[in-house]
Amino acid sequence: MFDQYGYMYILDTGNLRIQKWLPGMTYGVTVVSATMSGPLGMQFDYSNNIFVADTSNQRIISFSNICRKYSVFFYSNLY
View 1 (cartoon, rainbow, N blue to C red):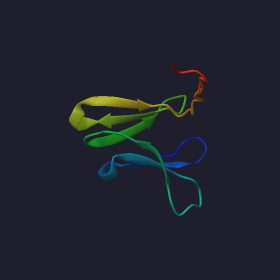
View 2: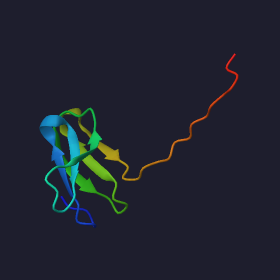
View 3: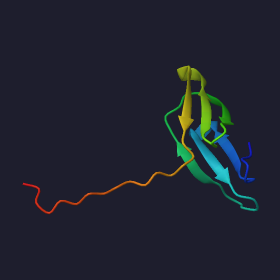
């Protein structure tokens, strides 16, 4: 399956992951690695989020295509 930018996404059922392949590359980058059982179908929504049919678990799983920024808090006095 291809996204709007021409990147190819492959649902690697045997390894329970989704890989993204950029045009001209000889290797893929794992963008999703999840606990699934029998994933058989994949689709994008209008925001490029990925939906996977996890058939053996009888569910649809969604994965955000946006990287979120996490805040890290440091405390100088923990006791």
